[in-house]
Length: 462
Image 1 (cartoon, rainbow, N blue to C red):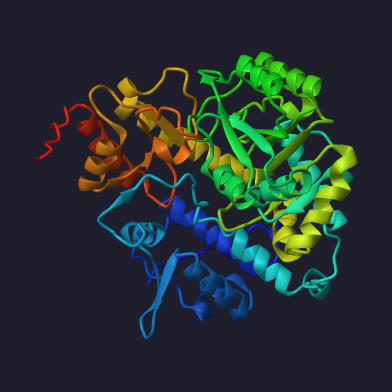
Image 2: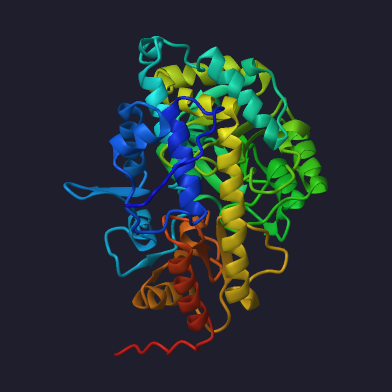
């Protein structure tokens, strides 16, 4: 049995959390080796002069987090790294496939914040209020205040009354479109765009038209021409790290797009879910054309995929209309989920979680740049996904099929195309999902091998 006497910080309360923090620190520092047997609960409680229940709660939470494992009759042991990694990787239905088609990244599974937050919520006296159905459609005032504080990190400075809480960014886009459009309205977007907006346009019976792009994203000339030749109701765009191309509009381009929208009285839906990734926030279009822009973001990318909380900032005169659309569809966004997000924002935990994701994506992107460098555009910045233009004579569907034959799943450019114009021969490769870095590296190496090959010509039998 390991003689372990942790140094419990007097600043951390309650004590079982302080003990958990000390346990993690000593495991990370190598003071507790994998497989080491921890002192019994009674022995450790006696050694530290704390209650047995305190040790029990710390050990139980550590087991839930995958730090230790308890064996009946034998004791509690520090888990081996391979055990933790196996639990942390979810390869989906087919473990033989490396799925690089999902543009998300799970949180740091070693982080005890979610468990701590849920435990704290269960003991709060106002829990019934958070479960009350009759709350404001735009969100509780406390949650909107936290949302306004969070948005400042992205360069959006608005009063809490302008913030509307939604069930994620996709719901935010659906709510805005439901509030400002009618069936048959024309919505403009980039010629290759986020597939979610295509689904919403189909659902709401909207006409979607793709506009030209260059290496800086949507072109002002294309936007101007579409506004002059038709009557578009709105433009949907991603100015920062566009999905799927990863392109980012410079400030001058954003100013041009904002000016055109104002001149033609066209609403802009600015999806900024990737806006937290650059180390320095870029001025959003919403700050340049606030009376015409609906700023949309969410926590699925920055915090946790299953935390379906979004923030929409409509023009000031449209807040009530957007809130009314929420009331007509879902009535309100779940206050309990909004409270979890608010607690993380207020404590600074949300910032730490976003920082972890930013650093993790930077590391994964560096790996991808080293492996796939010859096929990546030099201006591409760290992002959840890569857009690879396939070399001749590869065709998109052939490459996607051959990659799957080698156990790697990627997205075809067809999934993101708007209209029936010529589809570029390209694929989207995601760096997140639930893959470990090791599995990601294997998948990227397989793609590099494939890109270096010449596809066999297909043979048609008459």
